[in-house]
Length: 214
Ligand code: GRF
Image (cartoon, rainbow, N blue to C red; front, side, top):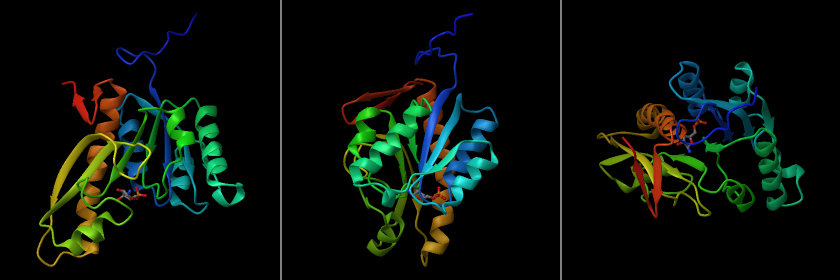
């Protein structure tokens, strides 16, 4: 029997997600758990990491998900490294690329292969405190409210159209040790939610704005 072609609306097949990490992969775990609970019509097809010792690779393997270290040092250039990432994603028929604690800029080789199909999570309310130190930077600035942003990725750091944001108040005397857990709690809730919205075809990008179809 012929397999029905997946379409965005009314798709029959779970969305094939590729996750790229650099570290412990607690966001990856939150996404795996929501998928396993049957709450997101998706499956993780592959997990990639630029770091060989990233614990997230082990989390993936524990769930039977193919997981690979793609070593930038083993490649001739940043472009070759990104081509290697792209090829692994294509090999696994990935439809949506999820950056989950991936601490490098994603190269155009990947972005152009997946136009409008790469999402990222940032531990601050963008456009404030972009870059690799969103939590310490917000604390150092003295803002009273920070938060979490899920957005589509583009060719700059942390600048693509915003899908979801949620505030996290900063308390008197907060440190990274006390604030990070409250940021994570929000991340583990809104990243799976954003992926679910994408998988259900409910995100419409209009210029810089992302409309959510209720
Ligand atoms: C998260 O706080 C995410 O916002 C940031 O890096 C962290 C990754 O943590 N980009 P984990 O690897 O998911 O535990």
